[in-house]
Amino acid sequence: MKQLKKKFFAQDAYTVAQQLIGKWICRKIDGEIYKFQITETECYIGSCDTACHAHKGKTARTQIMWHEGGVCYVYLCYGIHWLLNFITGKEGEAEGVLIRGVKDAVSPGKATRAMKIDKSFYGESLLTNERIWVEDDGKAYSFTALKRIGIGYASQEDQDRLWRFELAE
Image (cartoon, rainbow, N blue to C red; front, top):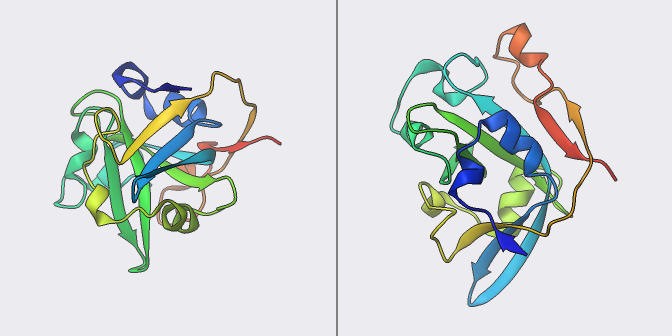
């Protein structure tokens, strides 16, 4: 397997969300390396996307979204679940991909619990970090494009976008 490089994460969120399907999140936990295959993603594209956290501008929580691609954006959802996103694109563009599921953990909250992801991963590099990175096994994976979930606050147009991608079994 080969670690994904800066060039991969420099692409737009829509492209990265699709290309992440089947890739492997690698986590070093207590000296052991665990690999989690990505089975579901969802993309969010900047201030024009009313479902994106960047839509209302920079805040203390969202400032990392304007970073260049290849870092983690982790936030607390409903005061319970830490959710993991990968920032994509060029610096200043505020795009990201939510990791909605990994094999055997079929929701964003279950995925982060399985990978032991918490607030400390906010801003972590996926390129130079020894705790988390992403690898490609070189295989092509099929996926299905679906509507995003849990964004009832967004415009109807943004709710109807097929920006969620799920591994086809």
